[in-house]
Length: 359
Image 1 (cartoon, rainbow, N blue to C red):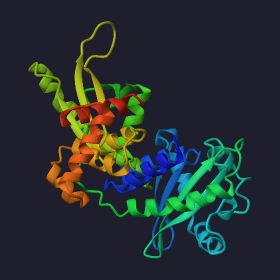
Image 2: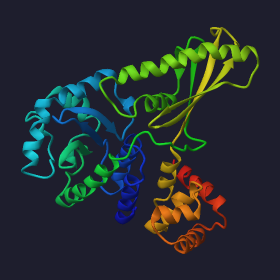
Image 3: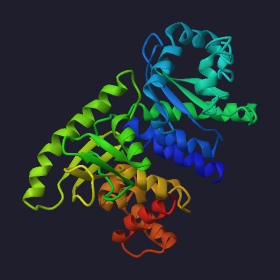
Protein backbone atom coordinates (compact mmCIF):
# COMPACT_ATOMS: atom_id res chain seq x y z
CA UNK A 1 0.00 0.00 0.00
CA UNK A 2 1.25 3.47 -0.89
CA UNK A 3 2.23 5.70 2.03
CA UNK A 4 -0.38 8.29 1.05
CA UNK A 5 -3.16 5.68 1.01
CA UNK A 6 -2.03 4.30 4.36
CA UNK A 7 -1.99 7.73 5.96
CA UNK A 8 -5.40 8.55 4.47
CA UNK A 9 -6.86 5.40 6.01
CA UNK A 10 -5.39 6.15 9.44
CA UNK A 11 -6.72 9.69 9.29
CA UNK A 12 -10.21 8.59 8.23
CA UNK A 13 -10.22 5.84 10.87
CA UNK A 14 -9.37 8.26 13.67
CA UNK A 15 -12.03 10.72 12.45
CA UNK A 16 -14.73 8.05 12.14
CA UNK A 17 -16.23 8.79 15.56
CA UNK A 18 -16.05 5.14 16.65
CA UNK A 19 -14.99 4.43 20.25
CA UNK A 20 -11.35 4.02 21.25
CA UNK A 21 -11.73 0.28 21.89
CA UNK A 22 -12.64 -0.08 18.20
CA UNK A 23 -10.32 2.50 16.65
CA UNK A 24 -7.08 1.99 18.58
CA UNK A 25 -6.60 -1.77 17.91
CA UNK A 26 -7.33 -1.20 14.22
CA UNK A 27 -4.95 1.79 14.19
CA UNK A 28 -2.18 -0.29 15.78
CA UNK A 29 -2.58 -2.91 13.07
CA UNK A 30 -3.01 -0.50 10.16
CA UNK A 31 -0.05 1.70 11.14
CA UNK A 32 2.19 -1.20 10.16
CA UNK A 33 1.48 -0.39 6.50
CA UNK A 34 3.17 3.02 6.85
CA UNK A 35 5.63 2.19 9.63
CA UNK A 36 6.69 -1.48 9.47
CA UNK A 37 6.33 -2.73 13.04
CA UNK A 38 4.48 -5.28 15.13
CA UNK A 39 3.14 -6.08 18.60
CA UNK A 40 2.27 -2.41 18.93
CA UNK A 41 0.46 -1.01 21.95
CA UNK A 42 -1.24 2.00 23.44
CA UNK A 43 -1.14 2.57 27.19
CA UNK A 44 -3.62 4.91 28.82
CA UNK A 45 -2.30 6.92 31.77
CA UNK A 46 -3.83 8.94 34.58
CA UNK A 47 -2.81 12.43 35.72
CA UNK A 48 0.18 10.99 37.57
CA UNK A 49 1.22 9.02 34.46
CA UNK A 50 0.30 5.73 36.10
CA UNK A 51 -0.80 3.15 33.50
CA UNK A 52 -4.54 2.47 33.67
CA UNK A 53 -5.12 0.21 30.66
CA UNK A 54 -3.39 -1.32 27.66
CA UNK A 55 -4.64 -1.85 24.10
CA UNK A 56 -2.63 -4.16 21.84
CA UNK A 57 -2.62 -4.98 18.14
CA UNK A 58 -2.13 -8.64 18.93
CA UNK A 59 -4.59 -11.00 20.56
CA UNK A 60 -4.29 -11.00 24.32
CA UNK A 61 -4.83 -14.77 24.46
CA UNK A 62 -1.09 -15.05 23.86
CA UNK A 63 -0.67 -13.94 27.47
CA UNK A 64 -1.66 -15.74 30.61
CA UNK A 65 -2.86 -14.04 33.79
CA UNK A 66 0.65 -14.08 35.27
CA UNK A 67 1.94 -12.15 32.27
CA UNK A 68 -0.81 -9.52 32.64
CA UNK A 69 0.28 -8.81 36.20
CA UNK A 70 3.98 -8.87 35.29
CA UNK A 71 3.39 -6.22 32.63
CA UNK A 72 1.50 -3.92 35.00
CA UNK A 73 4.00 -4.50 37.82
CA UNK A 74 6.91 -3.57 35.55
CA UNK A 75 5.41 -0.27 34.35
CA UNK A 76 5.49 1.22 37.84
CA UNK A 77 4.88 4.91 38.65
CA UNK A 78 8.61 5.26 39.37
CA UNK A 79 9.50 3.97 35.92
CA UNK A 80 6.67 5.89 34.28
CA UNK A 81 7.83 9.17 35.80
CA UNK A 82 11.15 8.85 33.99
CA UNK A 83 9.43 9.36 30.63
CA UNK A 84 8.37 13.04 31.00
CA UNK A 85 11.88 14.10 31.99
CA UNK A 86 13.41 12.36 28.99
CA UNK A 87 10.68 13.51 26.61
CA UNK A 88 11.43 17.10 27.53
CA UNK A 89 14.82 16.49 25.94
CA UNK A 90 13.68 14.44 22.93
CA UNK A 91 10.28 14.04 21.28
CA UNK A 92 10.48 10.28 20.79
CA UNK A 93 12.09 7.61 22.94
CA UNK A 94 13.71 4.86 20.88
CA UNK A 95 15.20 2.72 23.62
CA UNK A 96 13.46 0.80 26.39
CA UNK A 97 16.11 1.86 28.87
CA UNK A 98 14.09 5.03 29.46
CA UNK A 99 12.04 2.84 31.80
CA UNK A 100 14.92 1.05 33.42
CA UNK A 101 18.64 1.23 32.66
CA UNK A 102 18.90 -2.54 33.06
CA UNK A 103 15.79 -3.27 30.99
CA UNK A 104 17.49 -5.66 28.56
CA UNK A 105 18.95 -7.89 31.24
CA UNK A 106 16.08 -8.88 33.58
CA UNK A 107 14.02 -12.01 33.18
CA UNK A 108 10.99 -9.92 32.21
CA UNK A 109 12.61 -8.89 28.95
CA UNK A 110 13.66 -12.44 28.08
CA UNK A 111 10.36 -14.02 29.09
CA UNK A 112 7.94 -11.46 27.67
CA UNK A 113 9.26 -8.58 25.61
CA UNK A 114 11.90 -10.40 23.55
CA UNK A 115 9.64 -13.33 22.65
CA UNK A 116 6.94 -11.00 21.28
CA UNK A 117 9.34 -8.85 19.29
CA UNK A 118 9.57 -5.81 21.58
CA UNK A 119 13.23 -4.84 21.19
CA UNK A 120 13.50 -1.73 19.01
CA UNK A 121 10.80 0.79 19.81
CA UNK A 122 9.21 4.17 19.28
CA UNK A 123 7.53 5.66 22.35
CA UNK A 124 5.87 9.06 22.59
CA UNK A 125 3.06 10.61 24.64
CA UNK A 126 -0.34 11.32 23.14
CA UNK A 127 -1.38 14.77 24.33
CA UNK A 128 -4.75 16.42 24.92
CA UNK A 129 -4.99 20.03 26.15
CA UNK A 130 -1.26 19.97 26.88
CA UNK A 131 -1.46 16.89 29.11
CA UNK A 132 -0.44 13.30 28.30
CA UNK A 133 -3.35 10.85 28.14
CA UNK A 134 -1.39 7.87 26.94
CA UNK A 135 1.76 6.46 25.40
CA UNK A 136 1.87 5.14 21.83
CA UNK A 137 4.39 2.35 21.31
CA UNK A 138 5.56 0.72 18.06
CA UNK A 139 8.01 -2.19 18.11
CA UNK A 140 10.38 -4.30 16.06
CA UNK A 141 12.23 -7.50 16.99
CA UNK A 142 15.96 -7.72 17.60
CA UNK A 143 16.77 -9.07 14.12
CA UNK A 144 15.26 -6.04 12.36
CA UNK A 145 16.81 -2.59 12.01
CA UNK A 146 16.04 0.20 14.51
CA UNK A 147 13.63 2.97 13.51
CA UNK A 148 15.49 5.67 11.58
CA UNK A 149 15.03 9.46 11.77
CA UNK A 150 12.52 9.56 8.90
CA UNK A 151 10.36 6.96 10.62
CA UNK A 152 10.59 8.83 13.91
CA UNK A 153 9.35 12.00 12.21
CA UNK A 154 6.44 10.12 10.63
CA UNK A 155 5.63 8.62 14.03
CA UNK A 156 5.26 12.06 15.63
CA UNK A 157 3.03 13.10 12.69
CA UNK A 158 0.58 10.32 13.66
CA UNK A 159 0.23 11.23 17.34
CA UNK A 160 -2.50 13.89 16.78
CA UNK A 161 -4.53 11.25 14.92
CA UNK A 162 -4.61 9.08 18.04
CA UNK A 163 -5.40 12.08 20.26
CA UNK A 164 -8.40 12.87 18.07
CA UNK A 165 -9.61 9.25 18.16
CA UNK A 166 -9.54 9.24 21.96
CA UNK A 167 -12.08 12.07 22.09
CA UNK A 168 -14.83 9.92 20.57
CA UNK A 169 -17.45 8.61 23.02
CA UNK A 170 -17.54 4.87 23.68
CA UNK A 171 -21.31 4.51 23.98
CA UNK A 172 -22.41 5.17 20.40
CA UNK A 173 -25.36 3.42 18.80
CA UNK A 174 -23.31 1.02 16.66
CA UNK A 175 -24.56 -0.86 13.60
CA UNK A 176 -22.95 -4.29 13.19
CA UNK A 177 -22.21 -6.50 10.20
CA UNK A 178 -24.46 -9.55 9.83
CA UNK A 179 -21.62 -12.07 9.51
CA UNK A 180 -18.12 -12.49 10.86
CA UNK A 181 -15.46 -14.89 12.08
CA UNK A 182 -16.62 -17.79 14.20
CA UNK A 183 -15.45 -20.57 16.50
CA UNK A 184 -16.76 -23.68 18.22
CA UNK A 185 -16.67 -25.06 21.75
CA UNK A 186 -18.12 -28.00 23.65
CA UNK A 187 -19.66 -27.30 27.05
CA UNK A 188 -21.77 -29.17 29.57
CA UNK A 189 -25.22 -28.08 30.66
CA UNK A 190 -23.73 -26.17 33.59
CA UNK A 191 -21.65 -24.01 31.25
CA UNK A 192 -18.23 -25.54 31.91
CA UNK A 193 -16.06 -25.45 28.76
CA UNK A 194 -14.70 -28.91 27.94
CA UNK A 195 -13.20 -28.29 24.50
CA UNK A 196 -12.75 -25.24 22.28
CA UNK A 197 -11.01 -24.51 19.02
CA UNK A 198 -8.29 -21.88 18.64
CA UNK A 199 -10.68 -19.46 16.92
CA UNK A 200 -13.19 -19.70 19.77
CA UNK A 201 -10.45 -18.99 22.33
CA UNK A 202 -9.44 -15.83 20.49
CA UNK A 203 -13.05 -14.66 20.17
CA UNK A 204 -13.69 -15.15 23.88
CA UNK A 205 -10.67 -12.97 24.61
CA UNK A 206 -11.93 -10.30 22.20
CA UNK A 207 -15.32 -10.36 23.93
CA UNK A 208 -13.86 -10.17 27.44
CA UNK A 209 -10.92 -7.83 26.94
CA UNK A 210 -11.48 -4.88 24.62
CA UNK A 211 -8.80 -3.29 26.77
CA UNK A 212 -6.51 -4.89 29.32
CA UNK A 213 -6.72 -3.76 32.92
CA UNK A 214 -5.80 -5.26 36.24
CA UNK A 215 -9.30 -6.73 36.55
CA UNK A 216 -9.04 -8.53 33.20
CA UNK A 217 -9.65 -11.92 34.80
CA UNK A 218 -12.84 -10.74 36.51
CA UNK A 219 -14.37 -9.71 33.17
CA UNK A 220 -13.71 -13.15 31.77
CA UNK A 221 -15.34 -14.75 34.81
CA UNK A 222 -18.35 -12.47 34.36
CA UNK A 223 -18.87 -13.57 30.75
CA UNK A 224 -18.46 -17.27 31.54
CA UNK A 225 -20.87 -16.96 34.47
CA UNK A 226 -23.52 -15.48 32.16
CA UNK A 227 -22.90 -18.26 29.66
CA UNK A 228 -23.40 -20.86 32.39
CA UNK A 229 -26.71 -19.27 33.37
CA UNK A 230 -27.96 -19.42 29.79
CA UNK A 231 -26.78 -23.01 29.36
CA UNK A 232 -29.02 -24.12 32.20
CA UNK A 233 -31.96 -22.35 30.54
CA UNK A 234 -31.13 -23.59 27.04
CA UNK A 235 -31.73 -27.22 28.00
CA UNK A 236 -35.44 -26.40 28.30
CA UNK A 237 -35.45 -25.16 24.71
CA UNK A 238 -34.04 -28.41 23.42
CA UNK A 239 -36.65 -30.49 25.22
CA UNK A 240 -39.32 -28.45 23.42
CA UNK A 241 -37.48 -28.88 20.08
CA UNK A 242 -37.36 -25.14 19.46
CA UNK A 243 -34.84 -23.66 17.01
CA UNK A 244 -31.27 -23.45 18.41
CA UNK A 245 -31.32 -20.77 21.12
CA UNK A 246 -28.91 -17.87 20.92
CA UNK A 247 -27.51 -15.16 23.16
CA UNK A 248 -26.06 -11.81 22.12
CA UNK A 249 -23.15 -10.26 24.02
CA UNK A 250 -22.09 -6.70 23.15
CA UNK A 251 -18.58 -5.45 23.88
CA UNK A 252 -16.58 -2.54 22.45
CA UNK A 253 -14.92 -5.07 20.13
CA UNK A 254 -18.24 -5.90 18.50
CA UNK A 255 -21.28 -8.11 18.80
CA UNK A 256 -20.80 -11.75 19.78
CA UNK A 257 -23.59 -14.20 18.94
CA UNK A 258 -23.58 -17.48 20.88
CA UNK A 259 -25.73 -20.31 19.46
CA UNK A 260 -26.29 -23.59 21.28
CA UNK A 261 -26.87 -27.04 19.76
CA UNK A 262 -27.76 -30.18 21.68
CA UNK A 263 -25.25 -33.00 21.11
CA UNK A 264 -26.72 -36.49 21.03
CA UNK A 265 -24.72 -39.21 22.75
CA UNK A 266 -23.06 -41.60 20.26
CA UNK A 267 -20.56 -43.74 22.17
CA UNK A 268 -19.27 -43.29 25.71
CA UNK A 269 -19.33 -39.51 25.87
CA UNK A 270 -20.77 -37.88 28.98
CA UNK A 271 -24.44 -37.09 28.60
CA UNK A 272 -25.80 -33.58 28.47
CA UNK A 273 -23.30 -31.78 26.21
CA UNK A 274 -23.86 -28.69 24.11
CA UNK A 275 -22.12 -27.50 20.99
CA UNK A 276 -21.74 -23.73 21.21
CA UNK A 277 -20.74 -21.54 18.29
CA UNK A 278 -19.61 -17.96 18.76
CA UNK A 279 -19.66 -15.47 15.89
CA UNK A 280 -17.95 -12.10 16.04
CA UNK A 281 -19.76 -9.34 14.17
CA UNK A 282 -17.63 -6.21 13.84
CA UNK A 283 -19.00 -2.67 13.71
CA UNK A 284 -20.19 -2.17 10.16
CA UNK A 285 -18.44 1.19 9.82
CA UNK A 286 -15.08 -0.43 10.57
CA UNK A 287 -15.56 -3.11 7.92
CA UNK A 288 -16.52 -0.45 5.37
CA UNK A 289 -13.49 1.69 6.21
CA UNK A 290 -11.17 -1.29 5.92
CA UNK A 291 -12.67 -2.33 2.60
CA UNK A 292 -12.16 1.14 1.08
CA UNK A 293 -8.42 1.32 1.84
CA UNK A 294 -7.21 0.34 -1.61
CA UNK A 295 -10.08 1.68 -3.68
CA UNK A 296 -9.39 4.43 -6.25
CA UNK A 297 -11.63 6.92 -4.44
CA UNK A 298 -10.74 10.42 -3.30
CA UNK A 299 -10.92 11.17 0.44
CA UNK A 300 -14.28 12.94 -0.03
CA UNK A 301 -15.62 10.11 -2.17
CA UNK A 302 -14.71 7.66 0.61
CA UNK A 303 -16.63 9.77 3.11
CA UNK A 304 -19.63 9.82 0.80
CA UNK A 305 -19.35 6.07 0.19
CA UNK A 306 -19.17 5.42 3.93
CA UNK A 307 -22.40 7.32 4.58
CA UNK A 308 -24.10 5.95 1.49
CA UNK A 309 -23.33 2.36 2.52
CA UNK A 310 -24.96 3.06 5.88
CA UNK A 311 -28.18 4.10 4.10
CA UNK A 312 -27.74 7.83 4.69
CA UNK A 313 -29.80 9.94 2.29
CA UNK A 314 -28.11 12.28 -0.17
CA UNK A 315 -29.62 15.29 1.61
CA UNK A 316 -28.16 14.22 4.97
CA UNK A 317 -24.79 13.47 3.36
CA UNK A 318 -24.70 17.02 2.01
CA UNK A 319 -25.45 18.48 5.44
CA UNK A 320 -23.00 16.16 7.18
CA UNK A 321 -20.11 16.99 4.84
CA UNK A 322 -21.09 20.65 4.34
CA UNK A 323 -21.26 20.33 0.56
CA UNK A 324 -23.97 21.01 -2.03
CA UNK A 325 -26.52 18.29 -2.94
CA UNK A 326 -25.34 18.55 -6.55
CA UNK A 327 -21.78 17.84 -5.39
CA UNK A 328 -22.98 14.76 -3.51
CA UNK A 329 -24.75 13.56 -6.65
CA UNK A 330 -21.55 14.05 -8.65
CA UNK A 331 -19.50 12.09 -6.10
CA UNK A 332 -22.06 9.26 -6.08
CA UNK A 333 -21.87 9.00 -9.86
CA UNK A 334 -18.07 8.76 -9.77
CA UNK A 335 -18.19 6.17 -6.96
CA UNK A 336 -20.59 4.00 -8.99
CA UNK A 337 -18.37 4.27 -12.07
CA UNK A 338 -15.15 3.40 -10.21
CA UNK A 339 -16.75 0.45 -8.40
CA UNK A 340 -18.71 -0.75 -11.45
CA UNK A 341 -22.10 -0.63 -9.74
CA UNK A 342 -25.37 1.05 -10.76
CA UNK A 343 -27.48 1.37 -7.60
CA UNK A 344 -26.76 2.36 -4.01
CA UNK A 345 -28.12 -1.03 -2.85
CA UNK A 346 -25.11 -2.65 -4.56
CA UNK A 347 -22.55 -0.58 -2.64
CA UNK A 348 -22.56 -2.27 0.78
CA UNK A 349 -22.41 -5.87 -0.58
CA UNK A 350 -19.55 -4.80 -2.84
CA UNK A 351 -17.58 -3.30 0.04
CA UNK A 352 -18.21 -6.23 2.38
CA UNK A 353 -17.07 -8.64 -0.32
CA UNK A 354 -13.83 -6.65 -0.67
CA UNK A 355 -13.26 -6.76 3.10
CA UNK A 356 -13.89 -10.51 3.27
CA UNK A 357 -11.42 -11.10 0.44
CA UNK A 358 -8.66 -9.71 2.69
CA UNK A 359 -9.33 -12.12 5.58
